[in-house]
Image 1 (cartoon, rainbow, N blue to C red):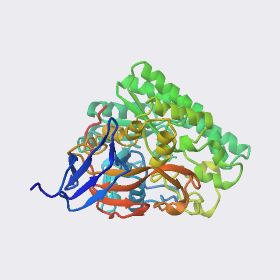
Image 2: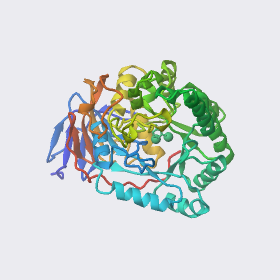
Image 3: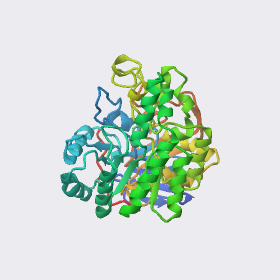
Length: 467
Ligand code: DUC
Ligand code: ZN
Ligand code: ZN
């Protein structure tokens, strides 16, 4: 008799970035060991008739327990963040080990391992954020860390405590080229933002809506173009993160047309929020303050078209969790803040996949294969986790989400599993929900209930990106 499987999932239709077919899934020791019919015997069988089996989501841009200055504190650590991700159909997260000025990059990575260790219920890898590219960092630490499995890092063109100047970015890109790593770029022009901010504040315009006015598309367009120029000069691919609208998209299309290898990411906030959500003088708009800011409906449509036409390779949450009623969050020190002091970021780990599935797949804007590619397969490839993650092949980890494509759900913060006290999508109805999610063969969520175990998630060293 064949060896008994640990788990058999029967009756589902398997959907990957390329294929759609009906097969049972045999799982042993956390891996997919068979796809076919008449599999078994198995210790446990899950009847998934009527459901779609998709590779678990890979959220390649989220912030958890990231050290903050100015008295700020993120609401989610690796326990609550990974729990929320799992309940939204995501089985791999890639948050950021952020260097502080004056700190060695190695120390930042070690500190972040302390924060993550024994907490995540799903597997995780790290990107790094390079803030202080000293000769030591460029010549010793970065090349060694790349070899050890930290093969992607983010650079910022804005934020006083994070930004690099042009020459520093060129230096970091050069190290990435030599090591075969991928640099993610936050593209907004810092001086333009601070100049516009000063002018708004001098005019007494300090409520949340002016956050969007201080960061118009022009500042994103210019920085995107500059980053594309750096990529050309150094001859290395880059990935532009959280693209918000048509003007940055035009730059990316232009560069691709010239044969440049420019990758791009977008996020749910640019499909579902607009600058109107920052309010008209009321502080509630602080809940939707993120950077780049949400734009308008025409730009939402441009981002949808960019997804449909494969301008974007990756769809991430950019989950950056700051609670609203929190003296370490949106109401810093218990007070309503001027827009330039509101912590940037919104929660989204758990709602990322249903929002894209609902508006994209059920809305007829992208195919279900594009959905899988954007949310799982392509991030796994770009960040060196494929085919262990991002696929449902024999030999891959049994990270599987079973979707009911017709399930109608009204999003409400009470049903979410993060530790943030709001969701910007409160009251929205989505169609399609991941009703069961497995991480290496272990059931981690079922029907809005978390069933995983903190600490079961493993750290994943990353291979070189597949570019
Ligand atoms: N913008 C960022 O660059 N990072 C975190 C959240 C945000 O809004
Ligand atoms: Zn960013
Ligand atoms: Zn971010």
